[in-house]
Image (tube, rainbow, N blue to C red; front, side, top):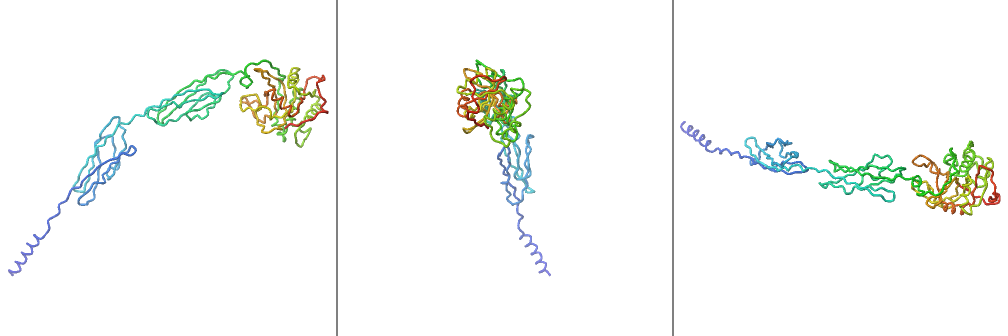
Length: 429
């Protein structure tokens, strides 16, 4: 019995002294840093460690009221740039915990005051080259060297600005009838701030002669126009409009002769070559005779003979090759032809009703039926009151048909006329 008690006491003693000593728990280590990306401050605590490999919790904090930390309980947090008005150093504290023990790490973030965006300066000027007004804004600057955008504008309805969103823009001379000062505004922007510059452009008014491209000094003029409408556009002459310069020109001449004449170019076309085709000069003469219109045919050995007929109060129908009439693309001008004729052999009928001598150049006043719907800015037909140089008409008639069909208000007399039956006749479009 004593042996059993001794054995029991020895077992208890052995058990107490054989147990291992409890392991000591170690504190985690907080490691904090930051970096800046596009005005976002990233807070990094993922390098914090725990010697016992315990799971850590994170808490980011600051005493600054100007900062709001996002994801403050994550190993990586952030806050947006507060855009302070002065430089400031903000203290950020990271606290990590293993559930029992904790550690802190401080990081000092230097936040620079927001750089002030300075307003750009708009600089505008202009210069004139060959009736084109160039608008220059390329000397505009931005103190921050920001990229600028440009916008040119005007309140004038008479001007259309071209390339209005470029540093250099332009507009064409509007050819005003009176002097006018036009205000042009340049607005430049750096995306946030903008500036404007005004430039006043003095546009000199032009006389009708200048506006129409005729010149400056009018020396002589005569016009046998009427105070009623007698112009026709061959566009409106029916199925064969593209071939109807003859029917249209002769209808205008008859309307000039007789205000009450009620027929139109379609009626003329239906009289000869009803199925289409170009009219000949003989068709013009026959139609005039059919309608009882006084007319005669004269030789144009000298283009000045047209002036003689105009001075007598007459008008004339010419058949000519329009290829030899100078072309202009100025939409305001009334001189020269306004349509393209790419090849020779462009036979055409026109009506001559007056002339002007400007700066020693002679222009004949024409009703050209080939408006084909084209108009000036005042909506008048471009073939109406057109002016062709005498030298152009001389060449174009000599090459095509060197005669003129003269229409008169009274019975024609004189030995200057030729017998239409004894000459060659030509066609027009």
